[in-house]
Structure formats: C-alpha cells, structure tokens
Length: 246
Image (cartoon, rainbow, N blue to C red):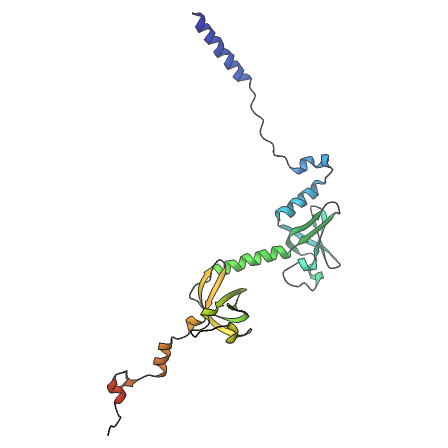
C-alpha cells in the first residue's frame, strides 16, 4: 500500500473518532425574572403581578371583604383593592351585595415597594361591552328601517339612538329632500325619528331620513290625481271635459 493511501486512512479514522467524542449541544433554557428574584431581592409574586399589569391579564377573583370606598380581593395571596368606581360600568350603590361574588379584573396598580395592588373589574366589563356592541353593529343589515331618538345635534348631522346600545348618524344631507342648512333647524334632542340604515362601515352606522320621504313627483301625483272613468289620465281632453265654452 502506498504511503499516500495510508495517510488518507489515518485522516479518516481521526475524523471519525473526533465526531464520536463531540457532545450534543445543550437545549436552550428560557429564563425569567423569577429565576433571579433571590439575587435581586425581589419578591417573585410581585414580579408576576407587575407582568399581569403590563399584559393586562384578566384574572378571576372573589370579593372577600368590604372596606371604605371599595372591596378586597386576593391575587397570588396578595391583598388587592377594588375601588367602588372600578367594580362595574355603572354606579355601584350597595357594596355589601358584592361580598362573595366573583368577577374578572385586571391589575391597574402593582407597587411592590408600597405593597399596593389595585384591581379593576370596570375595564374588563367595558371592553367586553364594546366588543359585544361591535358584534351587534356588524350584524346590522343595510336597508333596515329603524326608529330612534335624537341624542345630539352637530353642524354636520344628528346622532340618533336606535337602541341596543347603538347610535347612528343622519348626515345633514340625509335629513330631508329639502335643503337643510343646519340640523337644529328641523330637529332637536329628544325627537323621535324614523330612518333607513344606508351604510355600516368601521363600526359606524349611517342613517337616512330622506330615503323614507316620498319624492316630489310621487307627492304631486298623490295630491293632484286626475281620473277619468276610474283610470288615471292627464290628457288635455280630460282636463277640458265638462267645461262649457261660449
């Protein structure tokens, strides 16, 4: 065997041995602030509460006590305060009725230094109500005739409450077939109106009162009908019939 072939065999054996001795790479380890809590002298519970605040994590809690101006609930074993104004969307008059109830909340204050945890159920309730409202608006059918009450007037139109927590805009150009310069010239807050839904876009409803008005041509034909023997007629002969000329 030639010297060159022997050298090639030695190189191949060396490479194979080296490959066998290579250890597989260790799997990546995901580290969190909790892993360093002891070193940083930080309570890992408060780290998690701060993360809940940052991510606006929805937490289900039970009201465990009534205090001045609010109630108490515990998260991760930490006493949290829910102000009366943050319990629900509407005004809460009787705090005692909330004792023992469960509700979904988010953290709005997490101060580890002061050991202060404040929660809000109102934010969760408001977000869900808004999502439900958008779903109802998305289900609205263009062409539907609705009745509503004028909520407010702006130079560009009238906002009308059409029920089910939905409001539509009647643009000034859609109030009447007659030219309307300012909505307040023909409408006022509290007026009951009827309108047709003409568009639904980006969560907004456009209404038209004008679309329900009869056109001037239709009105004229209704008010001034000319009939001859049970049939409509506008001929000159029909107009002159019965008139005696000297």
